[in-house]
Length: 403
Image (cartoon, rainbow, N blue to C red; front, side, top):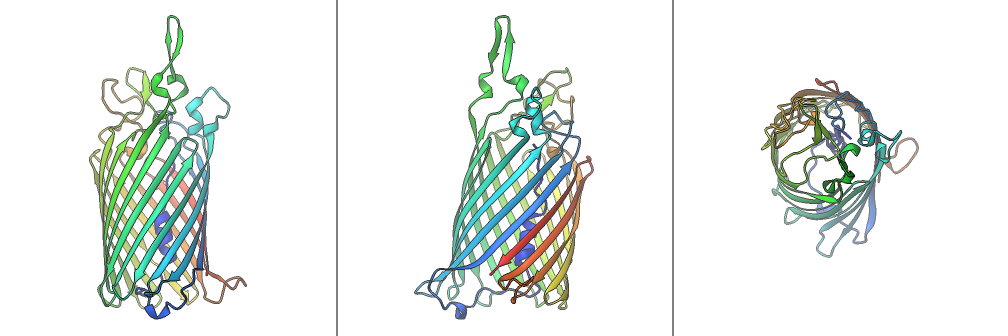
């Protein structure tokens, strides 16, 4: 099963960004010391893709996939006796997908259990903002589970603000401890011998996958019109990094499950800038360079230009260009040698260019929207994604904020 998460982080950023520069919270607003529900965020999206390079069937075959995703987050606030603002977050996400390629794991069935699945991902978070001392700290727990996968994670974060709130230094560390249920393609779950078929001992049990990530950000207000941010991450993965139900076909006609190294080091660095051209237009630009020790290097360029028609309504067209080189271990269908140590025919690890284009429509009013008094923000976002290797996808997302 291949699934692309298109523009999710950018969409969340569009929810929290506005046309005005946003200083840190003012301590004068910290009045109530009681825990209260401050904000409810709801995001729902529908995603569909098509292509003909399924990794499940060795780099060729149907990649049709649909995904219906929903997330609900509750944010609670309270202030303590030292006038520090505490934010408690509770989120529940549910995705349901159908996948033509996953159904080919067991091609002997008309429709196997893997053709559809539901993923649940709850999370808990806490942060504390100390305005007089100009810093914020936070921690969180994250979980995700589906038919063949369970993930548990945690993060800690720290941000330091300058006295005038024009500079912010952010640090964050994440760890995810995951467990895969071993699922082999049906024909590789056993061996034929003169005395009959025997079970493949490698085709059962569970496998670990651990991810450790450190993030650094430096945000700076250059002027009333220009804000910039320097972003950097260091990520290390270990464990079962190959997907064991994805086939690889060799030049001699034989095939096996995908084999990849059991470690991976990733280093992305980026630069984001927001330029406010008067009160109606913002130019949001982003560049990222990515490299890893599997041989992939990539570049991302993104531009979004929100236009504010009124204080309550804006439209934001966006475009993202992405290009990457192939991993050292990638080759298409029947182009690997059986003697190679590592091999994959997953086109996510191939060389390709991609384009993602769309628009975001945003309604925002403190007095309510559509006659609902506490409905503060309503957004609708559509994007079309295309790759030079033939993959096409569309995603439509609805987001609402109730305060």
